[in-house]
Length: 477
Image (cartoon, rainbow, N blue to C red; front, top):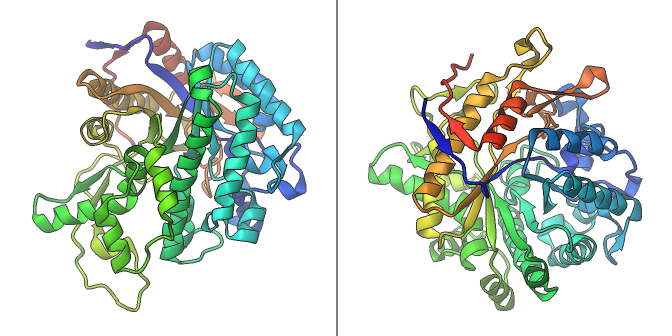
């Protein structure tokens, strides 16, 4: 059986977020995030009513979870600091000392366990009051409040945390809310969607500037980046009309963040098409210069499944507000391998293809797989006689995607590691605990107790031996 050596400095970790794990213990009534507000306004759309209120109760049980991280041997753990909970006064940057103490203790627990912390400053946790008062990321004032929040975080933890990220998947919330109008508050407004995109890119650049001015990179050897979710895009065919559809899809959903974050500028062709459809974001020359001068050190890439498109088959209804699908239709590849539980195609080549693109088009910046994983329903079906979920499907999935990351690295792409989504089962928007992703099972019926899955033991062996072997392909049913 073939085995691939994994370099000793290659990250083998796992990820989660604050809102998907912490729960609401200790949260004050005025500290709702956007996600909390959505859950309160429509908890019935969340699977079986589970959501951020209970989550996995990581806020109280983090010592147990960190002990499991240590047992598995994770090199790194990525999560977020919840902006809405870290401050009690968002305008003046007044810190909630109880929550800050929790983060402080959690960081110390990780470091003592030999696990490097990685923190995002925002993983959908925009304070609800800033959404209601200012329109959230529509506002330049909110950009400045985010920088103030970042300053308070860096002051507290910049001496111990070396891996910082501004956002996780900065395009997602506004795409669901303002572009596709499928999440609360269900407003279709394409121009607002693009303004949110721009202001998050600007916020990233301003926080990079702050990070540099505070001397964190020089004094602590830390780096700052952003976690993006590029939709690795494939055209239906080599025909020019399908290729053009893929190019436009990539422009709207990938280059809109990749280019300003890494290259410091927006593609001219994107700006031209935004002007054409009257959805160009409001920007100043000073802001664009900040973006140009303050690019990220590293980029994390969340990679789950490919996105396939073809040329649009129908004329656009001109009475419909502009949507990027003006330029494409989605395409389903016949015979594709599927995760039937999520309805997602399984195509590990996305990791290699995106890694080589980073090498060839984005200056070979440092990158790592920040999320990759497989959600499966009703995993209790796979419990063995010892009560352990025998998730061979997840082991197969991880090994196939990790192999592609290592292949890209071998061919010169600056890949620094692989992070599994997720460490434990946790809540997801609307799906809640329906699809399980973890190395560790969260037992909802048993006061949220923890139990390692077969994949957790497999990952432990992988980390110990630093050797990836070819795993049998799994037929998903």
